[in-house]
Length: 342
Ligand code: ATP
Image 1: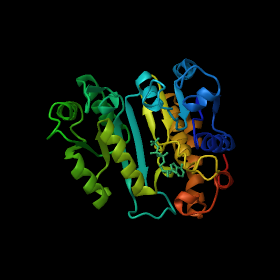
Image 2: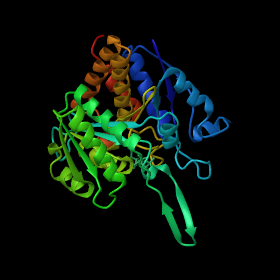
Image 3: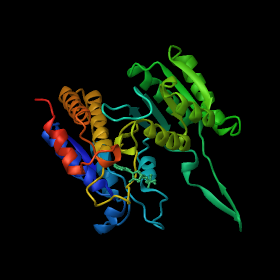
């Protein structure tokens, strides 16, 4: 059994976490959860902070977490608890796969994209200064170490996953020093260590246009933090939306798996949220455990869950965001009913 820290989060977080937990249990995934809290949920429980030290300590102890979206109340020290957690644990690589799903009708078929996003710097450093009344400076931070680290991580990931191509989305024509540094490091890593991976550079605005024209021309898209945030939602739109877009935040020691979506306050508490994005994130978590701890049982559980939700979608079992009528619990039942025998 692997111990995984479960952070249910806020808004739709608890609903989708409960659903995912049910599927993992039904699939006999070799996982035991310890529950910890962050965001508004932590304050509601009387904890000291939106990012309580006991939550961070639990992840450092067990190294793996499954996390629902967390809300950061204004004036609680952080601009975002999600961002703060990534920084605190040095989860420098965000990886977000976007694949077409059976039975989910979208503009394009067979989309298979992976966004790799630098997760610790850029404008997300949150350094903003009021220079004088009416003048604010917001700092975009880039360090050579982080540019090298994410470049190396992306090429290594591409090699392990047998992906042929990495395209960097950048704006080095304007941000010559910061985005230029990322290009510089990526070129060096490519030339020196991974010459067999096809590597190219596209200006971020043109890249977005080309993505909506023909997503199949890209494979892995590597970006600094803010572009990665924006292109992720565009890619989500290509495959059915935020309800089906999973993600992982990975560092040297720890990994936190979470959906791309936020807490979706507009539908929270109604029992209609799509649990697939977090469920797919849990499949990524199982595959991560399979790889890092060499546990075949995790790989098998991941495969069974993936088969089950593919079958459910193929059979027209869908939540509202995908044009169906099922609520969170009914969709979860339909996935569990389609789990292959273990
Ligand atoms: P954040 O700023 O945290 O990204 P946001 O409000 O911009 O939050 P989301 O909370 O992700 O973005 O919600 C964006 C839209 O997508 C909302 O209309 C929401 O209802 C919808 N949405 C997000 N996640 C899901 C889901 N799992 N199932 C169904 N709809 C979802």
